[in-house]
Length: 313
Length: 246
Ligand SMILES: Cc1cc2nc3c(=O)[nH]c(=O)nc-3n(C[C@H](O)[C@H](O)[C@H](O)COP(=O)(O)OP(=O)(O)OC[C@H]3O[C@@H](n4cnc5c(N)ncnc54)[C@H](O)[C@@H]3O)c2cc1C
Ligand SMILES: Nc1ncnc2c1ncn2[C@@H]1O[C@H](COP(=O)(O)O)[C@@H](O)[C@H]1O
Image 1 (cartoon, each protein chain N blue to C red):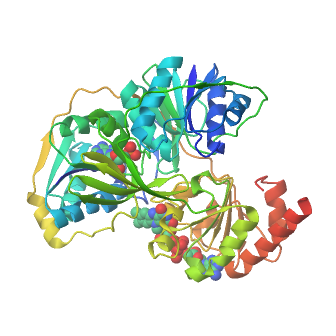
Image 2 (cartoon, rainbow over the protein chains, first blue to last red):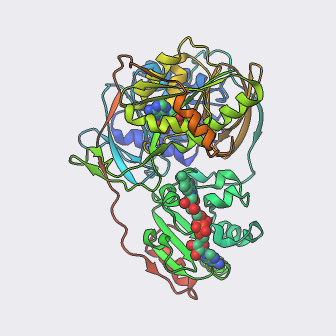
Image 3 (cartoon, rainbow over the protein chains, first blue to last red):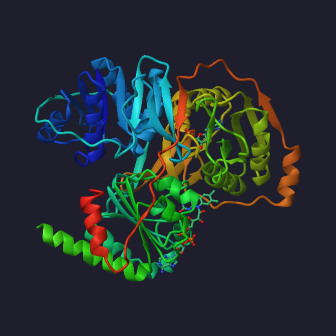
């Protein structure tokens, strides 16, 4: 039996559907455990991705990750889970390592693929500059899956939803305030990303970056110096010391392509580079390149995207 | 306030990544080691700021061999008071976390700080494992940290935003950008580091739960397709028809 933890507090994210699909592809039955008050109609759609049962604890808000550890441990025991799967997102990073200690089950953190024939599981190492193959020495194992590593697969089917409680004690953590920018796409989950660097010259010029992002429905990102000097918020900083992302499309304008920057984005499926300098190192990592001035190219790119979208409808 | 900061070595960010022994071992040939940036820039510097403001002691701990002493001295030069090295090769995150927990148990640390992740194995695992082993609360990926008596206030990253949370000491916290600014050690710090205590401790008997069986390098990119700067329609068409990403 495979058990998947998902956070359904804000509906079902694509990352959640990916983890259920991954569990199904491992073979065997799939149970899901979730906290939060999502309605049963929403949760039964997980059947389409391979779940046969969803265990829901609607009493836990999920803010205390220690409670989630207890929840998943209790569910694992109930269903007899051999493999437990998380998304390698902010919740998975907080919960999976603790569960590994609690169950003494080996953790594969940041898997990018299904197990190889010999059972070893591929992960990113050296900030995406290489891959490692992790062997788990325990019979029970935990896998956290990097977002956007496999596509969700929908095969119409249904599943049951059961109330479940781990009797996790009081929360050790008090939440004082939550700040979520409205409508913004969280960077690690974004499939399309438009990013810019020092070549944009100043924060007042980011309008043309945002215009392209809006036209595409993309998230925005930036290089480290741009976040360090305060042109853009820290959470947009991608690279070896920022967020590591692997979108389907990464568009980089006015970024030189330093090795530390590439480390955070080289898992992107397709890279487009816009730079005035034909010798910029980023072109070596790019699929498509435009040698030109971002101040001219970005608005033209936005127009071309708008024209394309209009023609599609 | 007693603070324990977990310090890992990491290959310098410009290191050439290669493997030996039939792709089963990282090739250390010519690799320079640095203090893992998250541990140094955020966890250690914030610990020092808290100590400077409120008094206390900052101990750093590394699970590693004698060859890691240079990295430990660098962290001492930045201002840590003393260092512990658990004399063992870090086998996996579980092994590392259990060694640190065994050492920290019963020593009354108010804060145990780690970096957000190591930049070589990128697991973001060790801190959570320490928290569970010591049965302490854990704040994962904190971008701000303030302490008032036994009350800790943190800002942490959540999916799509940030959250301010409060928790009581003792607590384990993994530290990320926003918490502090990098400090460059000065000559006095470097001199003082030479004589600060570095206690070498024998490892506890722990079995690792995982191992790296082998490594591989990503396939080389085929060369870039250059697009006419005056024909962005062509790029959009290629992204749709050829790359199939929009
Ligand atoms: C330990 C360490 C960790 C690091 N971690 C990171 C990290 O996580 N992420 C990161 O990004 N960096 C990181 N760096 C910094 C990295 O080495 C580079 O300095 C940084 O990525 C450069 O940012 P940039 O490309 O925006 O700026 P620059 O290197 O200044 O490049 C600007 C580019 O814009 C181009 N340009 C100028 N004008 C225009 C125009 N009008 N139109 C189009 N192009 C134009 C230029 O040709 C140039 O290529 C790290 C460095 C170290 C030492
Ligand atoms: N060998 C080690 N010795 C001491 N601390 C470590 C070691 N390895 C990792 N850590 C700490 O754990 C954090 C997370 O590491 P990781 O789980 O490998 O991403 C690092 O930023 C360090 O603070």
